[in-house]
Image 1: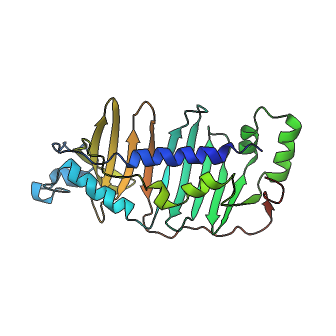
Image 2 (image 1 turned 180 degrees about the vertical axis):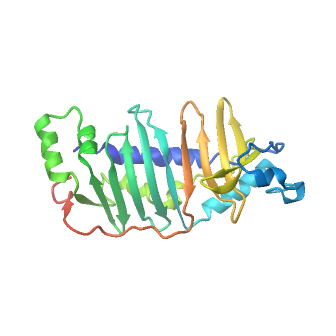
Image 3 (image 1 turned 60 degrees about the vertical axis):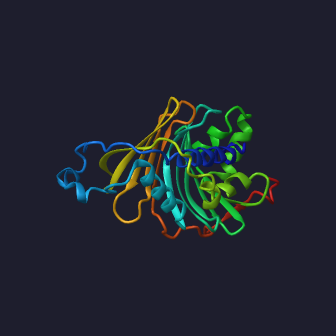
Length: 262
């Protein structure tokens, strides 16, 4: 099969780093409540989330909390400039370089993925395999489907074909460039993200616009980043902070792709 999926995951990691690296900025005024959080609109100024803090200060705290997490889960849809498709990911990863989750490209099928230790495991459904082999001889595609569809495969994580995804599974690498950019984040309204109370931050970078949701209860983790950037539009949700990643060797038959020559 073609190895497009491995290169695509590298693009996902780069996009995510770009989004999470745009959180700091200068002061802004508070926005009014948007109706999602009635308690916030009824609260006094002294009980207001992050009372007295500027958008930049809140963003700094959110970035510090997020980059300090031992693990997290990322979920979202991101356009791929090269293929024109939308990449959908749902992935948990940690600082030990482990990850577990799913990947879909253009809504055509799904691939499951696990990395633990020095091995990368992937399982593709038929639709994913056929989409990734588009343009190949039909006989070759049918053979790939017969051999791989619905079966776990394994590859050395340090191998040439797996190194991009292996790097993505390392939380240090994914968040490594998420630093204070000194841009112009401003405070917005209060709302909720999947039931978690949040404060909205708005940021501009030229013509690009970013909307950032920061948890107002517990640690100020990033909950979601929406980008309207012409270059990297998309949305990534963050959650399951500091929770164990279910990265274990799959049971049953595993097809060793390295033994097959990739």
